[in-house]
Structure formats: C-alpha cells, structure tokens
View 1 (cartoon, helix red, strand yellow):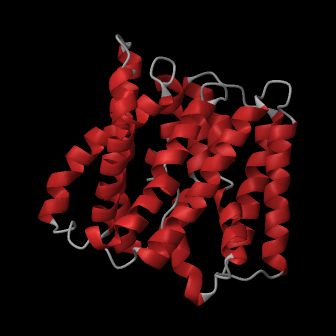
View 2 (cartoon, rainbow, N blue to C red):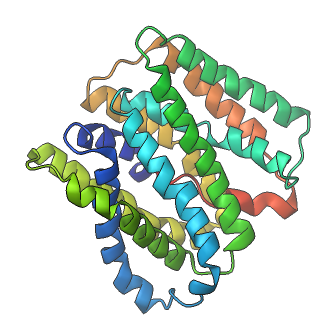
Length: 284
C-alpha cells in the first residue's frame, strides 16, 4: 500500500503533460468504478447507499473530486516529490480540524507536534521559493484539508456502510461530474508513457489500491493500517528523484523528517472515541 499510494504523484506528473487535470480524473475514476462494480455486487456492498447519498456526495467532494483536481493542477508546476511531501501534512490539518469540531483534544505533545510539522512545511516551501510556484503550493494545501475531512465523514456518517460500496459510489459520482468536461477536452493523441500513467492511476492506484486497503483494515485494524501514511512520501520522493530526475533539495531533506515527526506527535495516542478518524489515509 505504501508503494501504491506513494506512486500517484509520479504518474500524475507524467499524465498532466498531455492530459488536463479534470480529464485525468474522469479517465482515472470511470475505469476504476467499472473494475470495482463486479466485486461490489459480489460482496453485496451497494445496499443502503441511497439513504446516505448526501454524505456520500460530501465524501466524494472532500476526498476525490476537489483534491484530485488541485493535485493535478499543482503538478503542472511542482515536482512529484515536492507535492507528495506537502500531502504528508494531512495529519497536521486533521488534528486541527478535529480539535475545532470538538472531536479531539490537544495535549503538550500534540501541540509540539503541530509546531514541528508546520516548521517542516515552512522549511520545505521556504527553501524552494526561488523555484516554487506559490499558487501551486496553495493548490496542494486544499487537498490536504479535503483528505483530512474525508475520513471524518466516513467515521461519523458512513462508518456502518461497506467501504467498498462507498468508494464505488464516489468513483461513479466523480466520473459523472467530470464527464462533460472530459468528453470535450479529450486529447487527440497521447504518448505511450502518458497512456501507461493513466492506466496505472486507474487500475493500480485506484481500483486495486482501495481493494487492498480495505483488506488491510480487516487484517490489522484501522489504527495500524495508517502506518502507510508515513511511508508514502518517502516513496514519492524516491520515485521522483530516481525516475524523473527531480532534485533532492535542502528543503526536502529538512522538511521531510520534520513533517513526519510532527505528524506522528500530533496524532499519537488518540482518545478512544476518536481513534477511528485515522481509519483512512488520503487516497491520492
């Protein structure tokens, strides 16, 4: 899972060279939904979805429709490794959001974790100002907030529904929403490299990833499954540097450990009533 969900940033960076971010979402969601449909039917995971349609729409907006658009837009300007590391700040935003909503509380360790984590973000962005599009950085911050809200919706409003059914419904909704744009903005030609990137995003990073992730939750529980969140950015950085020749900057060297340490501190030993909020890491 760490490898699979550390890979999308590399594939998105390749795909947006020739495919618009909005079209890419359709090309990623529609095939993944078709692949998951037989499994969802076999597991009887589609019942009771309609009575929660409002919250499924809210989850789709927070976890897929908006984040994937802004990540794609950002990666037109930012490297995949830089984007992947910024996304690693999701636990920091989650800790703040859950506290504001009254679902969690802060102690000294968590406050220190927030300070350390955001110091890592400042180091990452600050040391790359000469080559970083600040507008694109803001576009990555928007998905991190959505990725933090998505698990909250699952936990509080959709937790009793089959996860596979919720994901299938979300993929269908995102496909329908972006279909009109995708149909009118489909590229006339794409290179083999871009085509393979799109297929990888749909089949491996979406359809297969969600199936494996829900199996992982069953096997080890939601709390332990979130360990992959701390490894994803390392995979994104490694792939970006090795395969795309992206620079391993001073900002990454400083920001990477600070963001991960801060995230661990800010989200450690959650209160029993909120531990399920970490049940799902961001699906990039």
